[in-house]
Length: 91
Ligand SMILES: [Zn+2]
Image: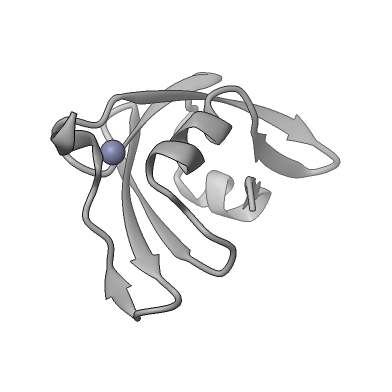
């Protein structure tokens, strides 16, 4: 789940830094690091915290949108076919 296809990263037509923020809402501030492994981009540092905080489950769908130097992330629940609200605002 933490693999981003290399073709997607190339299609962004920009050189992202190895460390970028992911945000699902204005209160989100999750920094993750990318690494290229076997022609794929793997999100490693920070990813598990992002998964845990947003209670992501297998088969949930994430949509990444490039914004500035990071990604806006929309989360869709596979179980309920709805967009999931970010839990970061409840801190
Ligand atoms: Zn969040």
